[in-house]
Amino acid sequence: MIKWIGLAAVLAAATPQPSAQTGTEHLTWGSYQHLTGVFDVGGPLPDGRVVVAGSQQLFLLDPARGQVSTLGPEGGQGGEAYLAVSPTPALRVTSAGCEFSSGEVYQLQLTGSPGVTRVDAQGRAHPFAHVPGVDSLNGIAFDTSGRFGHRLLVTGSHRGGTAVVALDCAGRSQLVTDTGPTLEGGLAVAPAGFGSFGGDLIAPDELSGNLIAIRPDGSSAVIAPSGLPTGGDIGVESLGFVPAGFRAGGHAYMADRATSNNPHPGTDSLLRLDAGQLTRAGVRDGDLLVGTEGGALTIGVRCGQGCRVFRVAQGPAVAHGEGHLLLVADHPAQASAGLPADRNLGASVREAGLLRQLAALAAIVLVAALAAGLLAWWLRRRRERRHA
View (cartoon, helix red, strand yellow):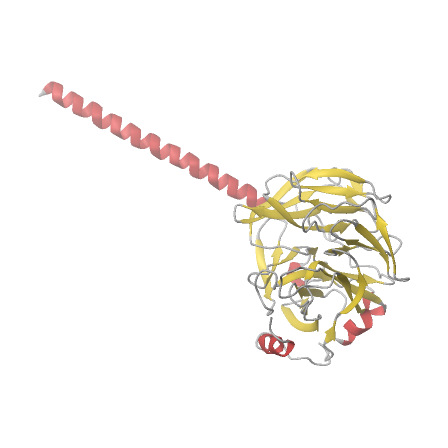
């Protein structure tokens, strides 16, 4: 891992130096709550609590009081079973004629057949959906902006690439792409005001350090290189958007997972930063915050006409960041207007399928033409021999 001073040098070539606009205060994540096996955080619930995933248990954390309780019986979904909490107000999927009830937890199911489990407000777990066309699952997020039709988005590895699948509130799936770039970890859908990437699914790639946007049609683009260290268990892992009203008060959270035999062994705790600190560091509502797995090094990304990267914070050197980077406003403001659902959901997959069909048809026509030519040649030679 490079020192923070070294990171500043790495970022300097591609990033504006701190100013009154970007802030001059570089922060350090503070250890907030020790939670066994912590690897993800989501929410908030309608009552303001956040949901924390541990290796064998879901926890409920009340930030106002610092109190922790459990949600449901012990037992985990295995590995890095990331979660997403259905937002308030409830997301209605018009095409399906139903909605995702506010405050329920949707968690990746990594054991057995890849799927998603729904955990209701009483902590009862229910099978929600099987996710077809993936070898394993590695990301989950709700479409809060609308371009994906307010569906639940999950990602997974598939034949060396990435599949993105959209699930409606009835658990029905629609493939967005099965040839996406490599990605894994905390995912989020960009708000409408995030420049040309508004409404896209945003994901990190720890291997290249790139921040990636997946569009509803299944195509993708690089938002910006993070400028952070790269590699497995080191690179960009956690991300989240700053909600409207955050500057008036709130907190950011990131899971610091204990990981044995690792250069960044973690502390099994939830890390936290205060909204006031982040504001002084230049963070604004609508910005994207991105943290690394190794050391919780954190940058901000602001997109308008273009995208700009600026440094924000670092974690304890031992930190091992996992899952989403969650930002919660104490008094949420009205978010910007949503975006209309894209009618071309998964269009690139359909186009690729059509091209494959056309290529197969062209191959059949070519083979048939060759066969017809050979037959004509054989018949002509046969007639010539008869008349010789």
